[in-house]
Amino acid sequence: MIFRGSKGFFAVFCVEYCQVCGAPASTEAFLEGARVWLCAKCLRFGKAVAKKIDYPAGVAPLPKSRESVLAEGFGETLKKAREARRLSVPELAKKIFVNEKELAKIEREELRPSEAVARKLERELGVTILVEE
Image (cartoon, rainbow, N blue to C red; front, side, top):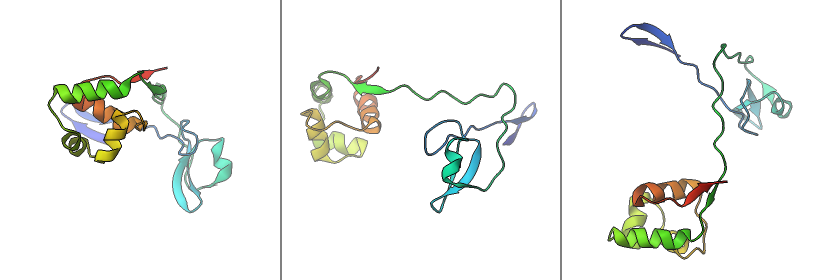
């Protein structure tokens, strides 16, 4: 993409990732009827529809984030933080757009939250429940 700024034009290069394995993608292709980005290794599963992307010198794909795991006692941490903010389970569930029963099970550690839900809980309650391996 090319943008016009106060000091002239500048280009922004977006790096696409393979939608099969997550590696930096090089080709747009059709895979089972869907148009997706694929790396050189996964291209054998689809049919190329666009040319290979040659990234300019100095432009490298961002590293994938490291795996995160839930901290020990995450449910109790969440419950204490929620109670400290004087929020009920239904109120917190509504704020972060999750089901009340799901949130209650997460607090009792009967259900492990997805990373997205865990991040929402961390942000809303100001706690840390995800730790990097």
